[in-house]
Figure 1 (cartoon, helix red, strand yellow):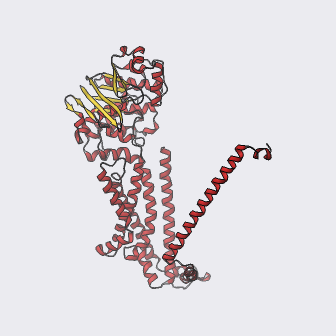
Figure 2 (cartoon, rainbow over the protein chains, first blue to last red):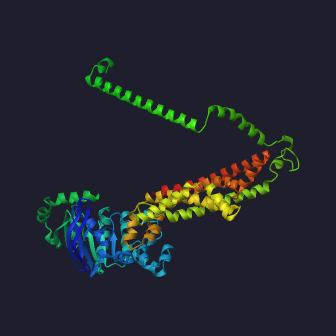
Figure 3 (cartoon, rainbow over the protein chains, first blue to last red):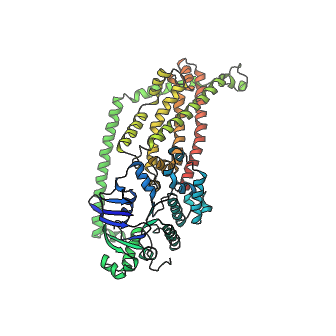
Length: 266
Length: 300
């Protein structure tokens, strides 16, 4: 159970996230939507502690995540894995090593620095790659893969962290519709294994198709929290003051993606 | 369109006036700047006693020195043995010893480059502004690198000769220290240009700072670092061939001796050997460096 209370982050005079409170029960798949600058990314980055909150608290199963430092912080990061819009793989390393990055925190310092992993860990990594049909690419450099493949490598890396939560920040914004579907299916699949997933999405249709619950942000505040069927076109107009089509255009433009109005089958 | 018609337009007249005014302004600025530069140059020359007359008087003597150190070679005896005057073998009669010294010089440069660059690599990560663990570590690393490269190699060499005695060890350490400072700065700047997306990827997965350096940054900057290392090797070959002047090993020691004793023909022999060695190693290193850069470009 992830329990966020009064979470705030300011960048200078700009407030990115403003007193946000949210309870996430274990095993849910939550879609976070909002326009550019709504604070979606900052929210996810604060949970992983890549960005430190200005105020507020994040509790996970009773542990105060905002107070963690050093090894405890690294252990937390391992448990709440992160997926990025730009995949954030090491382009010049092979795919297998990229996946094994998910195990670094569990390895003794010296052997990890020498890039020495056990046969068992390599087997885990290969199995994770195989699950996303990438076992054949294990020894290729990451930059030889397509965007969709790279994002699936990133998900395989995340699986090796054996996380309790996955935070996905616009995982499909840089992908074409077909790859977007494979990546969303992969996320839904690991969610069914019991991992909580928080996913930032610019695309309402995808959010409705894949998520158990949708959270909408506007100017850093929570403006909607409920099941997908409650987020109707009328609701969108009430919240954002624009039609769903306009909302889709603005949200897509903000992440550099092409807007889509046709549903992708789940 | 006829010119007489175009010049009559009000826009043309106004434009031409503005153009002339701007050109006048620029010319005045250029003249003023030139005058100031010339004055500075003349003052500097006067202070440092760089008089044209001295230069003029000394020039012929440079030529005279070169004529003196030229070997006395004769066509008919060119390929005769070392006992015959006028042969190449007579000119290079100490080639075996000199070759050993040249190899020692190249070894000194290679070892010093490796040692210095290893130290530079360790210090470059905290000295890179984008990934430094703390402002204190950044300042410490940057200032240490600065101190290391500000002191000339020859000064280090004098200190180490005093400490460890005459020989190549002093020279290696001296060049290594200077290389650490010079390359550390270049390495840190290469790291500062690295893309931090993969750094965030490693950090978000629970990797430590060292893991970030090793897995996210190093693979990206490695070709760049190799290129800087080879460039430093080229520079260090030159340094190693003169550092022997203060007793720190290599061919420089021998060169200093023959210059001091006015063994004219031996001076030209050694200088020629040094030039050949430096050129050959330069060429090899340049090819390797371009190969490294090529791989870097291909990866983009």
